[in-house]
Amino acid sequence: MGAEEQIAEALLPTVEAAGLEIWDVERSGTSVRVLVEGPGGVDLDAISELSPSVSAVLDQRDDLVPAGRYVLEVSSPGLERRLRQPAHFARCIGQEVAVKTASPVSGSRRFEGTLVGADDHEIALRVVAGEEEQLMRLPLDAVARAHTIFNWGPAERARQGGRPPRAHRSPAKGDS
Image 1 (tube, rainbow, N blue to C red):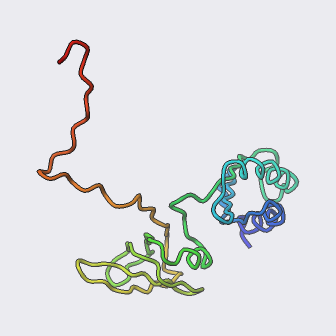
Image 2: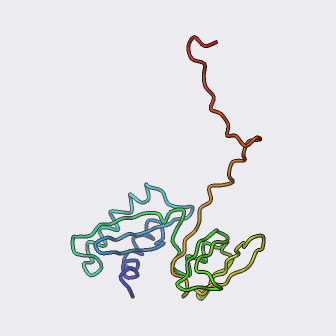
């Protein structure tokens, strides 16, 4: 079991007691990042209430973090969240994702599409190539990096004539 998994295991009771779940844990040098999620998301109040409890647990576990010398970040995984575990993919079925593979699959290493299936061994993406839609199956052990894609919504339609709308200007004093 790696350091991230050990940290997640140690923090699990504390995070669950707050009504949240651990999405992911990242550890790099003296930095520990704990990403938490809750039903319907997580807000800043929940994170600020959880942070001291997480810190207290880690302060007691010198085997998991450098004694007295670590930087802790407790955060939401965000809108464009990284997908690393089979459970991450399974929870994001129906969402748009970007996937980079370690080596080419069907001649490509980068894929974007709708995640339509996931299990412990592979993911299935519906990708659009030109006007054709196809189903891509990618082995999980081939995935080097993956994340969800947040779409802000449909682009604003262009005005007739192709010109952008003008800003309204109030007449200056003395203009008539």
